[in-house]
Amino acid sequence: MIHTLKSKDNNRIIFGLLLALFLSSCVSGKKITYFQNLSGAKRSEMEAVAKFTEPVIQIDDILSITITTIDPQSASIVNQASPQPGVGNARQEISGFAVDKDGFVELSLIGKIKVAGLTTAGARDLIRTKASRDLKNPVVAVRFANFKISVLGEVGRPATYSIPNEKVTILDVISQAGDLTIYGKRDNILVIREVDGKKEFGRLDLNTVDLFNNPYYYLKQNDVVYVEPNKSRVLSVNAPARTTVAFGLSIISTLVILFLRLDR
Image 1 (cartoon, rainbow, N blue to C red):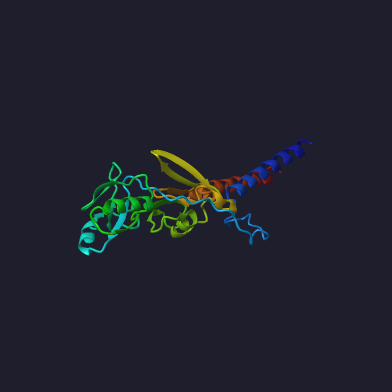
Image 2: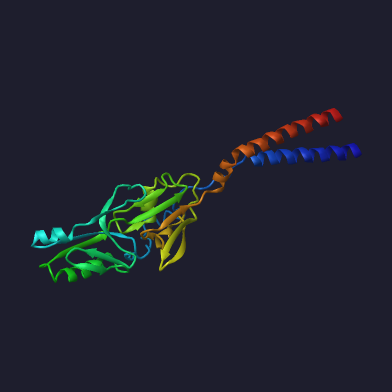
Protein backbone atom coordinates (compact mmCIF):
# COMPACT_ATOMS: atom_id res chain seq x y z
CA MET A 1 0.00 0.00 0.00
CA ILE A 2 2.81 2.35 0.90
CA HIS A 3 4.63 1.46 -2.34
CA THR A 4 1.44 2.20 -4.32
CA LEU A 5 1.04 5.62 -2.69
CA LYS A 6 4.67 6.38 -3.34
CA SER A 7 4.25 5.46 -7.00
CA LYS A 8 1.21 7.76 -7.29
CA ASP A 9 3.14 10.63 -5.71
CA ASN A 10 6.01 10.06 -8.13
CA ASN A 11 3.61 10.01 -11.06
CA ARG A 12 2.17 13.32 -9.91
CA ILE A 13 5.68 14.79 -9.76
CA ILE A 14 6.45 13.59 -13.27
CA PHE A 15 3.14 14.91 -14.60
CA GLY A 16 3.74 18.29 -12.96
CA LEU A 17 7.23 18.56 -14.41
CA LEU A 18 6.10 17.59 -17.90
CA LEU A 19 3.21 20.08 -17.70
CA ALA A 20 5.59 22.85 -16.64
CA LEU A 21 7.88 21.92 -19.53
CA PHE A 22 4.99 22.09 -21.99
CA LEU A 23 3.73 25.43 -20.71
CA SER A 24 7.21 26.96 -20.73
CA SER A 25 7.61 26.23 -24.43
CA CYS A 26 4.09 27.21 -25.48
CA VAL A 27 3.34 30.67 -26.95
CA SER A 28 -0.28 31.68 -27.08
CA GLY A 29 -1.48 32.91 -30.47
CA LYS A 30 -3.28 36.23 -31.03
CA LYS A 31 -5.84 37.03 -33.66
CA ILE A 32 -4.40 39.50 -36.12
CA THR A 33 -7.43 40.11 -38.34
CA TYR A 34 -8.77 43.66 -38.42
CA PHE A 35 -12.51 44.40 -37.97
CA GLN A 36 -13.31 40.93 -36.65
CA ASN A 37 -16.89 41.81 -35.70
CA LEU A 38 -17.78 42.80 -39.26
CA SER A 39 -20.36 40.10 -39.95
CA GLY A 40 -21.58 39.17 -43.40
CA ALA A 41 -24.81 41.06 -42.77
CA LYS A 42 -22.95 44.24 -41.97
CA ARG A 43 -20.59 44.24 -44.92
CA SER A 44 -23.06 46.06 -47.13
CA GLU A 45 -24.11 48.53 -44.44
CA MET A 46 -22.72 52.02 -43.94
CA GLU A 47 -20.68 52.27 -40.76
CA ALA A 48 -20.79 55.50 -38.72
CA VAL A 49 -17.58 57.49 -39.00
CA ALA A 50 -16.25 59.90 -36.39
CA LYS A 51 -16.76 63.57 -37.20
CA PHE A 52 -13.68 65.18 -38.71
CA THR A 53 -12.65 68.49 -37.15
CA GLU A 54 -10.07 70.64 -38.85
CA PRO A 55 -6.77 70.86 -36.97
CA VAL A 56 -5.77 74.24 -35.58
CA ILE A 57 -2.42 75.90 -35.99
CA GLN A 58 -0.06 75.51 -33.05
CA ILE A 59 3.19 77.08 -31.91
CA ASP A 60 6.22 75.72 -33.83
CA ASP A 61 4.08 74.64 -36.78
CA ILE A 62 5.46 75.43 -40.22
CA LEU A 63 3.00 76.85 -42.71
CA SER A 64 3.12 76.94 -46.46
CA ILE A 65 1.66 80.33 -47.38
CA THR A 66 1.33 81.52 -50.97
CA ILE A 67 -0.18 84.78 -52.15
CA THR A 68 -0.94 85.50 -55.78
CA THR A 69 -1.97 88.87 -57.17
CA ILE A 70 -2.07 90.77 -60.42
CA ASP A 71 1.28 92.28 -59.38
CA PRO A 72 3.59 89.23 -59.56
CA GLN A 73 6.61 91.15 -58.23
CA SER A 74 4.86 92.13 -54.99
CA ALA A 75 3.55 88.59 -54.51
CA SER A 76 7.02 87.08 -54.97
CA ILE A 77 8.35 89.29 -52.16
CA VAL A 78 5.57 88.21 -49.80
CA ASN A 79 6.07 84.53 -50.64
CA GLN A 80 9.76 84.45 -49.69
CA ALA A 81 9.71 81.73 -47.03
CA SER A 82 12.64 80.69 -44.87
CA PRO A 83 13.93 77.09 -44.88
CA GLN A 84 12.97 75.15 -41.76
CA PRO A 85 14.52 71.88 -40.50
CA GLY A 86 12.68 68.66 -41.42
CA VAL A 87 11.72 65.86 -39.06
CA GLY A 88 11.60 62.08 -38.99
CA ASN A 89 11.85 60.45 -42.41
CA ALA A 90 11.83 63.89 -44.09
CA ARG A 91 15.26 65.14 -43.03
CA GLN A 92 15.49 67.71 -45.82
CA GLU A 93 14.69 71.30 -45.03
CA ILE A 94 11.06 72.40 -45.28
CA SER A 95 10.29 75.71 -46.92
CA GLY A 96 7.65 77.63 -45.01
CA PHE A 97 6.78 80.16 -42.34
CA ALA A 98 7.37 79.08 -38.73
CA VAL A 99 4.80 79.98 -36.08
CA ASP A 100 6.76 81.63 -33.26
CA LYS A 101 6.32 81.07 -29.51
CA ASP A 102 3.70 83.82 -29.40
CA GLY A 103 1.66 82.27 -32.22
CA PHE A 104 2.64 84.72 -34.98
CA VAL A 105 3.99 84.33 -38.51
CA GLU A 106 5.82 87.20 -40.17
CA LEU A 107 5.25 88.01 -43.84
CA SER A 108 7.13 90.53 -45.91
CA LEU A 109 5.13 93.69 -46.71
CA ILE A 110 2.33 92.52 -44.42
CA GLY A 111 4.03 92.10 -41.04
CA LYS A 112 3.21 89.82 -38.11
CA ILE A 113 -0.09 87.97 -38.08
CA LYS A 114 -1.31 85.82 -35.20
CA VAL A 115 -2.46 82.49 -36.57
CA ALA A 116 -2.13 80.11 -33.60
CA GLY A 117 -5.52 78.70 -32.67
CA LEU A 118 -6.91 79.18 -36.18
CA THR A 119 -7.59 76.54 -38.81
CA THR A 120 -5.75 76.91 -42.10
CA ALA A 121 -8.99 78.26 -43.59
CA GLY A 122 -9.23 80.85 -40.81
CA ALA A 123 -5.59 81.84 -41.27
CA ARG A 124 -6.15 82.15 -45.02
CA ASP A 125 -9.07 84.56 -44.55
CA LEU A 126 -7.13 86.65 -42.02
CA ILE A 127 -4.02 86.88 -44.20
CA ARG A 128 -6.13 87.79 -47.23
CA THR A 129 -7.74 90.63 -45.26
CA LYS A 130 -4.34 91.93 -44.13
CA ALA A 131 -2.81 91.56 -47.60
CA SER A 132 -5.67 93.47 -49.25
CA ARG A 133 -4.32 96.70 -47.76
CA ASP A 134 -1.21 96.55 -49.98
CA LEU A 135 -2.05 94.04 -52.71
CA LYS A 136 -4.86 94.12 -55.23
CA ASN A 137 -7.28 91.18 -55.07
CA PRO A 138 -4.86 88.76 -53.39
CA VAL A 139 -5.55 85.03 -53.52
CA VAL A 140 -4.17 83.24 -50.46
CA ALA A 141 -3.46 79.55 -49.86
CA VAL A 142 -2.42 78.20 -46.46
CA ARG A 143 -1.59 74.64 -45.51
CA PHE A 144 0.60 72.80 -43.03
CA ALA A 145 4.13 72.16 -44.30
CA ASN A 146 5.09 69.95 -41.35
CA PHE A 147 1.95 68.05 -40.38
CA LYS A 148 3.82 65.32 -38.54
CA ILE A 149 2.81 62.20 -36.62
CA SER A 150 5.14 59.88 -34.71
CA VAL A 151 4.58 56.12 -34.77
CA LEU A 152 6.31 53.96 -32.17
CA GLY A 153 6.31 50.31 -31.11
CA GLU A 154 5.36 47.22 -33.06
CA VAL A 155 5.12 48.57 -36.62
CA GLY A 156 7.19 47.85 -39.68
CA ARG A 157 8.84 51.29 -39.85
CA PRO A 158 8.60 53.30 -36.60
CA ALA A 159 9.42 56.93 -37.33
CA THR A 160 8.08 60.49 -37.41
CA TYR A 161 6.14 61.04 -40.62
CA SER A 162 5.35 64.31 -42.37
CA ILE A 163 1.81 64.07 -43.76
CA PRO A 164 0.81 66.17 -46.79
CA ASN A 165 -2.88 66.00 -45.88
CA GLU A 166 -4.75 67.45 -42.89
CA LYS A 167 -7.43 64.75 -43.02
CA VAL A 168 -5.47 61.69 -41.90
CA THR A 169 -6.75 58.59 -40.12
CA ILE A 170 -5.10 56.00 -37.89
CA LEU A 171 -5.29 53.54 -40.80
CA ASP A 172 -3.47 55.96 -43.11
CA VAL A 173 -0.61 56.35 -40.64
CA ILE A 174 -0.36 52.63 -39.82
CA SER A 175 -0.22 51.89 -43.53
CA GLN A 176 2.56 54.44 -44.04
CA ALA A 177 4.48 52.91 -41.12
CA GLY A 178 4.43 49.49 -42.77
CA ASP A 179 1.45 48.03 -40.85
CA LEU A 180 1.61 46.40 -37.43
CA THR A 181 3.97 43.51 -36.92
CA ILE A 182 2.49 40.15 -35.93
CA TYR A 183 3.47 41.04 -32.34
CA GLY A 184 1.51 44.32 -32.17
CA LYS A 185 -1.59 44.58 -29.96
CA ARG A 186 -4.39 45.44 -32.35
CA ASP A 187 -7.02 46.01 -29.69
CA ASN A 188 -5.22 48.66 -27.66
CA ILE A 189 -3.51 51.25 -29.89
CA LEU A 190 -2.52 54.29 -27.84
CA VAL A 191 -2.78 57.85 -29.21
CA ILE A 192 -1.04 60.61 -27.24
CA ARG A 193 -2.21 64.12 -28.08
CA GLU A 194 -1.39 67.54 -26.65
CA VAL A 195 -4.35 69.90 -26.20
CA ASP A 196 -3.92 73.31 -24.56
CA GLY A 197 -0.65 72.25 -22.94
CA LYS A 198 -2.09 69.02 -21.50
CA LYS A 199 -1.68 65.43 -22.65
CA GLU A 200 -4.68 63.41 -23.79
CA PHE A 201 -4.60 59.62 -24.08
CA GLY A 202 -6.94 57.76 -26.43
CA ARG A 203 -7.31 54.06 -27.19
CA LEU A 204 -8.22 52.45 -30.51
CA ASP A 205 -9.28 48.87 -31.25
CA LEU A 206 -8.50 47.72 -34.78
CA ASN A 207 -10.34 44.45 -34.21
CA THR A 208 -13.77 46.08 -34.31
CA VAL A 209 -15.63 48.34 -36.73
CA ASP A 210 -16.33 50.64 -33.79
CA LEU A 211 -12.90 52.02 -34.70
CA PHE A 212 -14.55 54.25 -37.31
CA ASN A 213 -16.58 56.26 -34.80
CA ASN A 214 -13.80 56.54 -32.23
CA PRO A 215 -12.93 60.24 -31.61
CA TYR A 216 -9.26 59.40 -32.19
CA TYR A 217 -9.88 57.79 -35.59
CA TYR A 218 -8.80 61.07 -37.22
CA LEU A 219 -5.34 62.13 -36.07
CA LYS A 220 -4.04 65.63 -35.40
CA GLN A 221 -0.63 67.10 -36.08
CA ASN A 222 2.03 66.12 -33.53
CA ASP A 223 0.04 63.07 -32.36
CA VAL A 224 2.07 60.11 -31.13
CA VAL A 225 0.81 56.61 -31.97
CA TYR A 226 2.14 53.74 -29.85
CA VAL A 227 1.58 50.07 -30.68
CA GLU A 228 2.11 47.93 -27.59
CA PRO A 229 3.78 44.50 -27.94
CA ASN A 230 1.65 41.46 -27.13
CA LYS A 231 2.60 38.59 -24.84
CA SER A 232 4.11 36.62 -27.72
CA ARG A 233 6.67 39.40 -28.24
CA VAL A 234 7.51 39.48 -24.53
CA LEU A 235 7.96 35.71 -24.55
CA SER A 236 10.13 35.87 -27.68
CA VAL A 237 12.38 38.44 -26.03
CA ASN A 238 12.74 36.09 -23.07
CA ALA A 239 13.23 33.04 -25.32
CA PRO A 240 16.84 32.31 -24.24
CA ALA A 241 15.82 32.21 -20.59
CA ARG A 242 12.80 30.03 -21.37
CA THR A 243 14.95 27.66 -23.40
CA THR A 244 17.33 27.28 -20.47
CA VAL A 245 14.43 26.58 -18.09
CA ALA A 246 12.90 24.05 -20.49
CA PHE A 247 16.24 22.30 -20.90
CA GLY A 248 16.68 22.18 -17.14
CA LEU A 249 13.17 20.77 -16.63
CA SER A 250 13.84 18.16 -19.30
CA ILE A 251 16.98 17.00 -17.49
CA ILE A 252 15.14 16.90 -14.16
CA SER A 253 12.32 14.88 -15.69
CA THR A 254 14.80 12.39 -17.13
CA LEU A 255 16.60 12.04 -13.80
CA VAL A 256 13.32 11.51 -11.95
CA ILE A 257 12.28 8.76 -14.36
CA LEU A 258 15.67 7.06 -14.01
CA PHE A 259 15.47 7.33 -10.22
CA LEU A 260 12.01 5.75 -10.16
CA ARG A 261 13.15 2.86 -12.32
CA LEU A 262 16.19 2.22 -10.13
CA ASP A 263 14.00 2.46 -7.01
CA ARG A 264 11.78 -0.42 -8.12
